[in-house]
Amino acid sequence: MKKEEKNVKITPYEVEGSLSEKDYNNLIKQFGIQPLNPELLNRIKKHTKDLHFMLTRGIFFAHRDLNWLLDEYEKGNKFFIYTGRGPSGNTHIGHLVPWLFCKWLQDKFGVEFWFQFTDDEKFMFKHDLSLEEVQKYTYENMLDVIALGFDPKKTHFLIDTKHAGIMYPEAIKVAKKITFSTTKAVFGFTNETNIGSIFYTSMQTVPCFLPSVLKKKNIPCLIPLGVDQDPHFRITRDILPKLGYYKPAIIHAKFLSGLKTFGGKMSTSDSDSTIWVTDSPEEVKKKIMKHAFSGGRISIEEHRKLGGNPDVDVSFQWLYYFFEPDDKKIKQIHDDYKSGKMLTGELKQYLIDKINIFLKEHQKKRELAKKQVDKFIFKI
Image: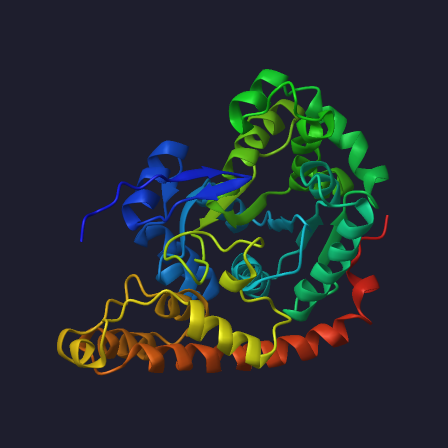
């Protein structure tokens, strides 16, 4: 088979192409971030006693200033976690990857978690969405965060339009330090970009230091995020020392592929390539059986003889990234599929069963979350 030339494009608003390990290594160099090495993982393990499989498997693969953050933590200056969601649609499985990792961090370090719902951003960037539609998705997305089991006493939801009164005075301090030429260079904005979009990074910066403002002392911030979001916070890290606050530390995640293409990013625009957290068991089975990209051979006979390729098989990758935390079991599946002992249909069915077990519980907790929303929204 002729090898096709890859065209990979990564910005905070667009991810095109499929990424290999080499591509992620190139991003480390391109973005000027640091790889998560064994020494740093061992340092984390000193505090957590064990490591999340997303760390040991390299799903979170790079960072900014994580050693500094741990230095502060060991001095008694406990950090907080910050991440967020632009509510432009319903929640899919890919969104849950950093959120579940945040849950583990909160449990292990006993820290506060600030979650920003950037309804303003999605209204300004998505021309086909009304503000009312964005706010409907905000509510639906909140249910999915709550359903993961965060501690309501240590978890605070910020909704940009609702909390503008507390956020805007801080955002304008940030905005005053950012030039239009900077946003054009980082995000590719043009003279046709609406001015709300140009201002938006100032609002996204605020949760990085809002707890410091509220408690009147400098508190370190850790942001788990998809690597495509790093450019937003490169600007943030340049600005905050000028305002007297710490740069946020960052830990970067790889993308969970959509079903149809290995190595890309799951998209909200292609429902057939996406598993929504509200999908029924029948929908999950239909999508995976029909659309999940396979590393198997063209016939059972050839597969039994030559084996499959788990490294490009989306069903295996979903198990590796999310649905099979047991390292012994994931190795067995990898080896059985590679040897031909496990067929593609069997691998897909194993994933289907895992997803439906997870979603059955998630959907039950999601329903219960409707009575808990008010506990999580930050009270001014």
